[in-house]
Length: 358
Ligand code: GTQ
Image (cartoon, rainbow, N blue to C red):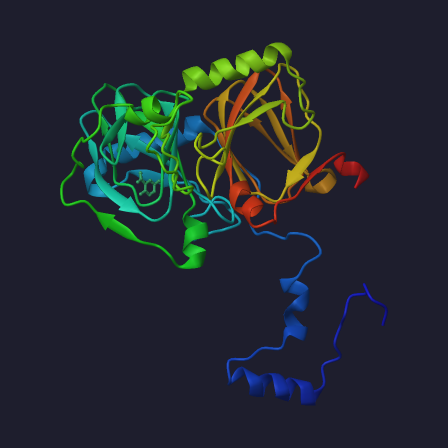
């Protein structure tokens, strides 16, 4: 047999008996499993999927008549990938959900080892508090809740308040290191002025005594007002990447690395009528549409699927899945993926190019 040919074993009664005998000792033959363990390329269970906000919103608001934020602890509808049923995962490594807080409600203070991010979709007058610092939330804002930080959410405004949660929960669960703790009171005491972390770490300075942990960004909020201006500025005089349009990564300003050690987060602008080149990478990605309408296309030929997108829609792009965008209107996309984890482990890869040619 030549190297590179698929190995097939002629099973013999002796080999079958041997396999049965070793199973009793909690042993298994690698020669039977190698082909499914070490595939030439990634083979993942997750599928491309898009959730339209309009339908989601209606279902989410219905839950407010059935359960309070306090009773629920977190009133969240999990976006579960159809290829990963029962896992609460949207990609192999990320959890995503839509969270609803109604006026006057409090989602009680707790902390957990998985890190979370909030990407705000709708409403006015709500806040999240992280370790006693109240962070106001506005549509388009990106907010970090680092691992093991106390956090509660509240709403002083009117009307429903909705955001997208993304957590590294499946990654952490794979390691076993899940911890969760409820704070004895509904709210953790407000112990810092609002937006304290922004004034300490978000204005290109750090307090001289600051020692970076490297694992928890001390900057917690990335308001859309500033993010949008950054994109607008780039648009004036930056080359458009054929796959990503104009794309920026959110970073921990004290390290220059991803805002969350296990989750990379991005904002990107696709100009009106932009059609991207095919692209795939090993990070499974969750996208949230901030502005604009268009199409996201996956694969080609008989495997081809496409979804129309509009503001606040959410879609999952699995690991190593070719996809491309066609923007009808100027589009802004937020995205979160496990690129940060993969890069730190030397695993991350990308491929650009024409799907049909590969
Ligand atoms: O807001 O703390 O979507 O603990 C899932 C678990 C949100 C949160 C989720 C959580 C939270």
